[in-house]
Image 1 (cartoon, one colour):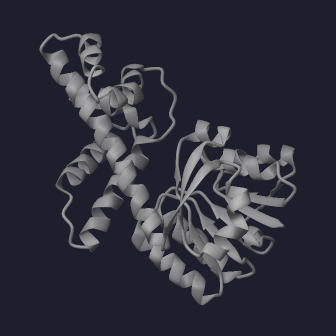
Image 2 (cartoon, rainbow, N blue to C red):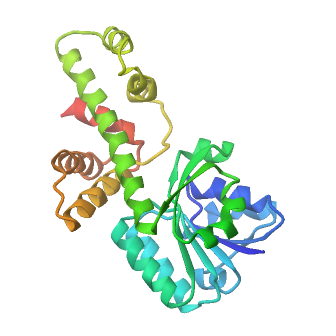
Length: 283
């Protein structure tokens, strides 16, 4: 089978690496070609353009940053409609997903939205949870491939449902992170040590949040797993998605503003999203 992969960033590269280790032909493209080049060691062909991928792939996987990047790439793929199935792993808005699905189907192309719950390390280990939206028949064609990095697939129906569920889950992650960051700053301002507070919080159901985020919030040396700027984007997509349905999201809206402020004014958009703690600490 001829497979294409577009977007070999932090998440995309280990996904493409799993696919490169299968018996299929793989062609990859990334805007910054140096990020894709190491895949050539595993037999992947490095394309010079999206057009080249589209013309040489039966199935194309995408893992890009936002609606704009996805829309731009899909436009090129659609103009070279040799592809039979598109699998979009990107975290995008359900509005864009619906638009992409309709455009693909008009050309006779199957379109699957399969956003991924996990981080680069869980992709490497093959332990992600994948939300699947789209045709069940189309999914049956790609499940053995996505199964290389998805430990579990959850089928949710229409593609836009997968996208909005991913945004809702990410929003819950960011709210949990923000709540712990603000709690730590509050007690610290009253001379309560972080460890004392965390020990008490860990005796309650809040232990799950403490275990997930405390060390990452307090450790300045933590490596970037998920960029704060992308978290801000996800929060704004959630607000936009709610607005489209007439659903106010007041807490999400305020959190989106905070993350955008940290990203743009605080100049830490390329840092890990847990650096929101450092930004709030300095305000």
